[in-house]
Image (tube, rainbow, N blue to C red; front, side, top):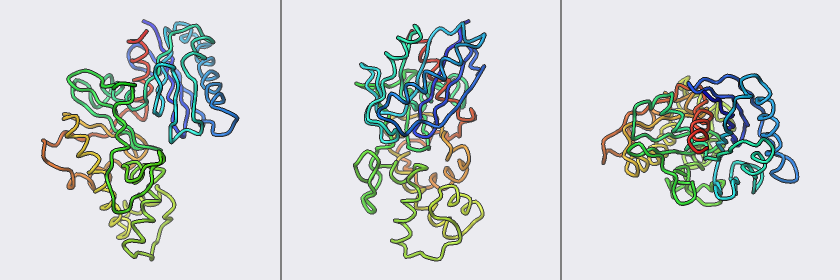
Length: 308
């Protein structure tokens, strides 16, 4: 059976893997995503270097395709990443440069859409035909499978749930330039900004942890610091608003949460938001991914095999 080269291009890390037909990662590499340079070509070059190293391995010589999962938005017609608020360059050309260099089919998919495919293949959504994948990372992304079909939308960008409006009180500006979006409050990058706005509104100034660190805020909540716990309730309300919209939009039987916030603090995230989730439709099963962050890589591989 063929192997596949899978790439996960995120705002923070660039990962690549050689994936077997049984969803095993036969080799894996990760580097920080480039943020400095004249153009997005520096990212394309970094991806090509990872792919070249994997293809040089014995099992890599049997690779049938290259699948790239990336933070969006995407222009699938051109095979570009365009205007991503979490990537440093306005355009990153993906498909054609890799196809020309390596002579293999190349498929580009949003990383969260890849994530839902990975979870259905080998993770917490195996056997589920109605599932939503939510990644709580540098940004917030989503992917939905409805009645067994992956939803892509007109331009491959269906599922940009991080840009669901969840608030008008604080009116925090998202990386995309609009205000009140879920990502502006609950992504790993933006939680400290939300904490600062909440703290000012609540007139809370006596703090025993570093308010500029998302990790420090969550660790304080885990240690039952009263200020951190009060903030977690406010954060839980924002997460619940986003999840409530996801439930009525897609009617899933399971929602799988992934990304560093979910993997490290999923118990806190789910516990704090669950009481605030609307019950207009039945509450689906809420699960934390058990794929150690590999769902987008696995999904990119599955998508590339299907598309070749």
